[in-house]
Every structure is written in C-alpha cells, then in structure tokens.
Image 1 (spheres, rainbow, N blue to C red):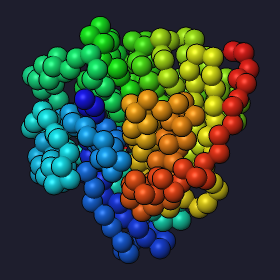
Image 2 (image 1 turned 180 degrees about the vertical axis):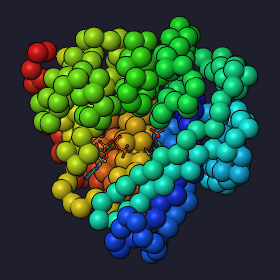
Image 3 (image 1 turned 45 degrees about the vertical axis):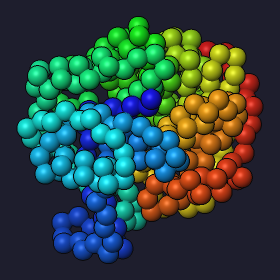
Length: 310
Ligand SMILES: Nc1ncnc2c1ncn2[C@@H]1O[C@H](COP(=O)(O)OP(=O)(O)OP(=O)(O)O)[C@@H](O)[C@H]1O
Ligand SMILES: O=P(O)(O)OC[C@@]1(O)O[C@H](CO)[C@@H](O)[C@@H]1O
C-alpha cells in the first residue's frame, strides 16, 4: 500500500491576476482553492494516474475539514490526526511571475505527534511512505529522520521530498528515494548547481554519501536527472511556456512511484515521472493521465556519464 505523509498541509488559494502591484488593491480574474501540501498533492496525482494511496498527516479547523471533505469526494483514503488550530492557507499569486506566501502551521503537541507515530507503526514490509513538504513549527528537525530510521527497520520504503535542515537530517537515515530540486541539492552541499552535469555529479555524491537507492534531481524546465548505483539518466521535457509550477515536483514524485511500482525500467520510470511533472507545469491544475500519456511521447532520454565527485 502507498501512504503519503503531509505534516504541514495547506489549503492552497491560487489567484490569477493580469498584473500584480504591491501597495494597492489587486482584483483577481480567476481563482481556485485546492487541498494542498506536498504529500496530499502526490496522493491526488496518483489518483489521477489510477493508483490508490492513503493520505496521513495533521489537519485542523475549518481548512482541515475542507481538505478532508475534498479528498474523500475524490475517493482518496485519509487517516489524519486532528489538531486544534486551523490548517494553514497558502496563497499562490499568478501574475507576471509566480509569488507564494506559505502560511504558518498550527501547533502540534506531543500527543498529536505520538498519535501520528502510532499510525506509522501499522506500516509494514511492502508498504511505501512518501514523506513530503515542510515540518510544522516546533517539531524536532530530525522528525523525518526518526520516521525513516524506524520504518526502514521494518522494510518500509520511504520516498522523501523536503528541503533545508529537515532534508539534510532525513538523508542521514538513508531513505529509499529522494527528490531534491537542483537548488535544494545545492543547498545541501553548499555549492552552486546550474547545469545538468553538476546535478548528475552531486546526485551521484548523494548516493555515495548516504544510503539512498534512487535519487531524482528535478530541474524545472530542464527536466530531471535520475541516479542509482552505476546509472545516471536525464529526461528532458519539450520547451513550452509553463502555465503553473505549483505541484510540478509532487507530480514528478507521483509519476515515479506509479511507474516504479509497476516494475518499469529506470528509463521508462524517469520518462513517466518527468511527463507527470511537465503535464502539471503545462496545465492550470494537476496533469491528468491522458495529459501524462501525451507528454510521454515528447520527453527525451539521454544516458549521462556523471563525472567523479569533486
Ligand atoms: N517550465 C517547465 N517546463 C516543463 N516542465 C517543467 C517546468 N517546470 C517544471 N516542470 C516539470 O516538473 C518537474 C519538477 O519541477 P521542479 O524541478 O520545478 O520541481 P520542484 O522545485 O519540486 O517544484 P514545485 O515545488 O514547484 O512543485 C520537472 O522535472 C519537469 O518535469
Ligand atoms: O511549505 P511547504 O510544505 O514546503 O510547501 C507547501 C506547498 O507550497 O507545496 C505544494 C506544492 O509543491 C503546495 O500545495 C503547498 O502550498
């Protein structure tokens, strides 16, 4: 069974404006309200692709209730721990460029964390857990690391998409899969990553430095680099104007899982993952299965020879 874990979900309020000006009143021309947070997005895209999952994490207040209602309406299983405050609202402004204001998490108490840990004890070998997004305020920076370490002992495979200190700590427990974007990878190694070759080089270093089986380094419009022991592959999407970048990375993770769990080859899996990411980047919302299949024809694969670590 696939589980997704979103410790810091959000109600995403997406507003489209012809022109965005600070210091004055802006009126939206289009707007959407979606359940959000990276793990929840992975569950929604998996559903689009025909793969079931259960969404775990913390939800609270009117925003939390709305998120659960929408997910249940979409026939996505949920098993959230209820917290007292309101799940945050994240504002995404689409104008000349995209601007995001990600809200604050509600307070998570010891009891809430224990209740979540109890749910995780039910996962077993053959289960997959996607751990995605930021940590709510107040939780220890090694929270993901602890989850990964104890799940790994039971044979549960973990797929990690987070950033900053939480990512660095999570790596120490050796997750099965990790998807940093090139900026997150650069931050981890305190370097600058601007080319596909740099991404492949530091991606390879990631595999050597930590006990990780699969890594995908996403590079927005440049596509993504996949790495596993003795293999590095690049998948490039077609060059077109992107409509939306919110959730493109989550779509890539969902596409990877969907294809990988069907036992497809690394080339097919990376192509499918990048197709899912780009299908979302080229749509107003998440790409549908049909969008992903169409995109698959236009994604180009190149086998790379990554340079040795610097
Ligand atoms: N401008 C674009 N054109 C084509 N594909 C894109 C574009 N932006 C993103 N994608 C697709 O989405 C994937 C993930 O994008 P990105 O590297 O921006 O991830 P991310 O930083 O995790 O994204 P986000 O946090 O916005 O969800 C890329 O590998 C690519 O397949
Ligand atoms: O603040 P975090 O947890 O890092 O990211 C949260 C978020 O920006 O990520 C998703 C897109 O990937 C959105 O649905 C959501 O608002």
